[in-house]
Amino acid sequence: MPLATGTVAERVATLRERVDEAALAAGRARGSVSILAVTKAQPRDGVLAALDAGLHDVGENYLQEARAKYDGLPPCTKHFIGHVQTNKAKAIVASFDMVQSVDRLDAGLALAKVARNAERRLRVLVQVNISPTERFGVPPPEAPQLAARLRDEGLEVDGVMAIGPLAGDVDAAFATAREAFERVGGTTLSLGMSDDWERAVRHGSTMVRLGTAIFGPRPAKERSLA
Ligand SMILES: *Cc1c(COP(=O)(O)O)cnc(C)c1O
Image (tube, rainbow, N blue to C red; front, side, top):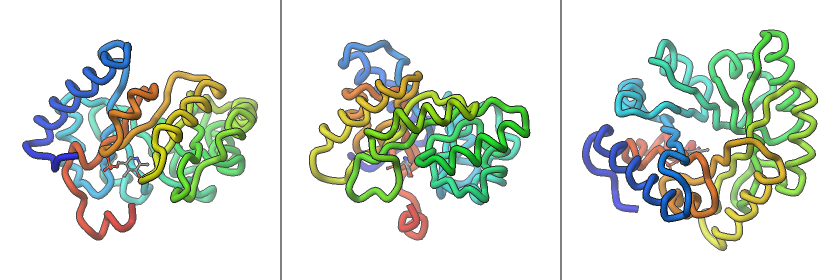
């Protein structure tokens, strides 16, 4: 992955074109893979630049970071992609449109309860673990059962999210995520980051989550948190 050059607008335009080309090469339609701008460690100006460049989806790992940054943005869909702490469920539901990182029943139950009380239909993804170095995520074979329980609780389970492995057999890991997605159902397979999104698109990703490719490297302090 070459270091990102140019402005956010230029990078988004280039990435949009490359993602479409990858989708076409995989026999899918232009526009069938959306780009989620991962804004962790980026200032609010960066978020605004990404939206201005035509993106519709933004994502954060840390609730605290998102609060001020995401307040009063132009129309867009805000995704929570960090670890769900049950005691933060209320604030997560208040700040985000979609939670991509539901990796266990108690997190889902906490979100469902808050959504019910707020009379909100909450879209979520089941996070599956496809990497030995990743702490979170449900084992892929358990994803359909978790999804069914979450649907019983009133959550709108729209697919699967996964973080690819840094090394090893990435293709096998992505194929596992795809298989879990097919069994869970829904419309979103959130798979692929700056270093592996092309391969993820080949494996059926419908949403790539890009931080570095859009904004450049994160400051070292934040990178160690990531
Ligand atoms: C940080 C992060 C990304 C984006 O990572 P890049 O390599 O900067 O594109 C995507 N998904 C999750 C869950 C992340 O934490």
